[in-house]
Image 1: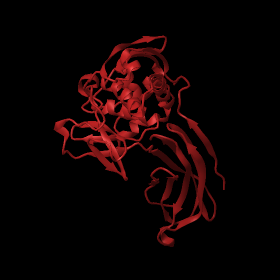
Image 2: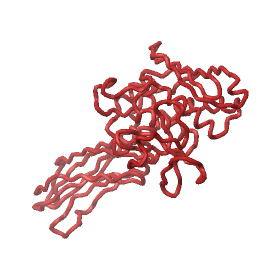
Image 3: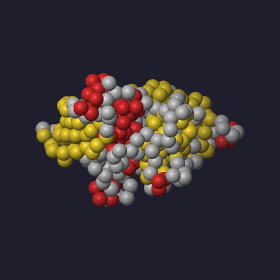
Length: 354
């Protein structure tokens, strides 16, 4: 009996480089005097220069700020090619491992400017949200041709705006990277974010797992933490916590290999891909030939478990094993993936006779 397996390889483009960011603060008396006001931001449409999208944004909070970012075309193209049908959990758009460096670099610009101006935590949050609130509102149908097209943060930055779900996802990604408690809030035909605050903070909030998250708009400008537009008061709210959810995808095949006087041998091969967000931990592939004639949940000896280790977001790999089944028996071959932080995947062949 023999089996072979291959280590996990990343389906990752070496050219997926982080955003390069230049912060050019223009300090006004609003910052120096400690009176913080919000104002509209202006972003310049993307231009492509030597494989990068060059973006410039201007926004106001405690002063006027300008940030220039260069986004590699390869990083933008990577996200354009990712699934855009995660409407069962919008938070996954905000949590991709591949743009964590990009989000951190952008967050550093807000933190540095806040330190220079003596911002409080409230001001840090509002500075980020003021930046996001002022991005142009664009509908999915007009910009993509789809009724619903949730964008990853890098897409929203390069596309120079988006609708409510896109700006909420971007704001959540930035605030999460800064270490603030944040959730996505889905209302009928609308999305915003919730920011974790103390129990005595004024304004509209939702309770989730014993904590209070205060409503914050990411479209329009001048909305503050706890303020909710009148049309959404009293509406049902779905809460999406920012928790990475890896998702394993698998295909497998079983082919006749050999026989002897007692057994028929089959080679089983599976290909795996982590199509979710975040690293799948302690992945194992399990192979077995079911033995219904021996009782429920019985398998022909030996079954095989192959430890594949961690599988990064977008990671791929494969595993193989040989199984034997006695002659003149009915069976199904089962292949399964198990791990610490994702839903198991179980597949079986049709019933066949040896």
